[in-house]
Length: 590
Image (cartoon, rainbow, N blue to C red):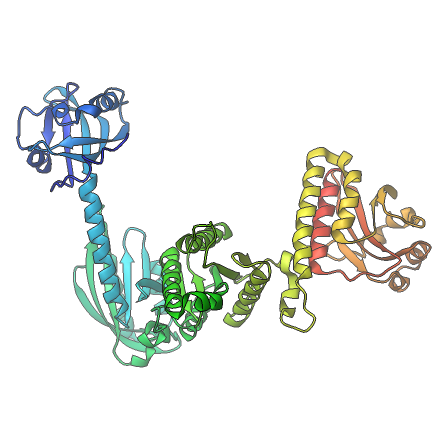
């Protein structure tokens, strides 16, 4: 429906109401809010309250309703003074009868009132978040519905979770450190009150320090209960350390904040990451962000404008992450993200893509360009590093790659694409060429693999030249090793090696490692491994090779050899991974 601007925005005190109407739309039952809204308690026909332009739509929704089903419409409904409000109606056939008359039940929500209530509540929420951010001790909540116990601190108007488990897991965790009978008894009383969601209670317990579980501390805990929309209870609590005021972590103090943006500073971010990964092996993404060409922004627009850019980007990053981790500023134009509860790379990419585009839009210019863009480097714990320094090093090097590839982009560390060469960034003689080669190789192997999978073995021969070009080799040979038979080859060989009666022997395949390939940088190295094989290879112009095998569709061993001719070759793990992938694809159709 098209909403009439003249009608939308009319004030009304009604937010929610409900009624039940017969098939001729006479109201048989309504709550107090409904009758207060319409101004009378009898002889109410709901059609008289619907705006004339939308009566047909409303009648169709009611008459076409199936039993047990609900439909929703947005329409305009007037009050006792004839003032229309935009409402959402949930119309349900519950097979409900009143005094022998079948009725349909209608839940009505005043969208304008709810919108304004939401805006006011959001303002209040921001106010209370600010208050909470000024509180340095720990907070907790226990959701009885989901059985989730969480301890957290508020910083930069966002909750930073430091512990999140079921109540039983929390109980077992703490009891594992308590040896004193009285301490156990006090803690059991606390747990029982949590389970029962008792109203307004205070306790003193001894428990492990939140920051250092090897030490015990005395805590005073004050609790209260709130009720969710479904009347399920949540216990809220404030945790005060009674005998160890130094226990509050640095990232939970005012000193841990960047004075300009209110985000965490570098030291606080590092401490938070170290504490978080020490407690669990859950996935966390780390990202380092840098404003592109920020010096140019300062030089052309002035430092006051540059300060506004810093503050705006800090705000955008914080709102985009929306409590799913921490945001920090490391000084200048460098920012930091460490995520919680982002479980897939797809989710993380969605966040980074939105963040990048939001900043472009915020500083967009009339010619379609953006004055301000960001580059981002990222990696994943624990796959890409087990500690803060190794994670930060990976993310920072990926940021370097993003900058060198043209800026205004993000790079998430991928061991196949980036490999171990990332550790060489910054060293003398380092080149971006391996990165570009790896990306081009990935595209080539993807195209070749798709063609072979789609068209079967008929596509193998036509793709051998593309494979050689991608791997920067001079030739490729494909054998059925079980039968000792050459199937395909490509390249300018002086002669093909006569190895058919060698590769079909059991001891030949046994020489491959668990990755299914072996590498020969110089063919002369073969003399110490297999003299017969060495003689067959040395009679050709093959200088180096990587051979890989997998079982084909009929169980035969398929051997694929990628050769350099009259030269040696240095292979990296990225090349070998793609060789393994392509060999698997080829074997699957043979």
